[in-house]
Image (tube, rainbow, N blue to C red):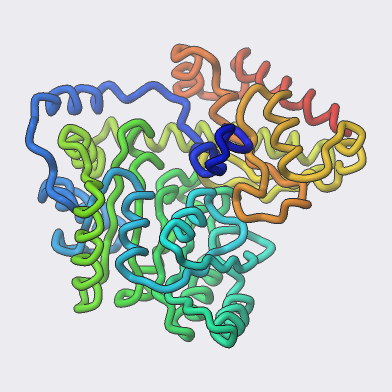
Length: 405
């Protein structure tokens, strides 16, 4: 991750990667991929029937009945979102902060991105009243907002919006005629699934919401790009899917055949895949809570992590100590912590947050160990925080944070 491209082409391709699981690939998935490696025929645009049917079964288990004709698959969520936004048209409303890759997608299409503050208690969804006011102002100034992007389990804040806030955000979007695209990539990385209610906007707005899920969230390695999208089973949904497939076809954005086989297998959640997803979420949750305690101990701020493999820390209370080290904004904080931690620590400016705010996303993966053996030991340990290599990693992080004070 670099601040800018040396040849002057901008920072997009040097932006922060999504938080990695930091775990070896599940052997069962490796076997499925290897068995499909002899396949030479490409997947059709939007994915073949097996992966789309598996996606339907996946969503049905989560209370979203779906037909294969309402599903599209592609080589990762960015490719699918780009095609969907290109098909739908109009400007896009996004929460602030939001995933680092959302805003570049909108701007790449020549559309305008308008960011709306999130509620104090979570990220992922815009404050409903701020959304209504922003849409009113944008339209009065000649803008054309048509789409609202939100997430049910958020990157970068690692929070899950409460059901009442998701409902209010959806109602606000419906009131101003915005089509909702719900990024549910991190839905199955919730740390405590029995105590956290995750509801899709597609259950609240069945005719006016699409669902997007990158399988790198909980099911596949990031190096096997695959994602699925669910469209409403309406005339408009059918039209939007068809136009999305047109864009996928024109750009050659097709999921690789062997990866499609692995994706279909993972979407069906056999025992080994489901167990790995649950264990990984539990592990990252334990480490994230430990990092959260270290942040609070030095006076920093952060919402309690609920999902994903990361936290979003606000080091503004440490501004005086950071200023003595030449750190005055999020970009400088990113550089400083990246060097001190030896791992990417993208600043808030990457997530459409204010440059002057000293916010940073911290990933839990680097704390799990260096070798595959150490990381697997953390995954299978009853108490991963008791392992010597995890304790060393947390102690090193604590020392860096303490030095900032």
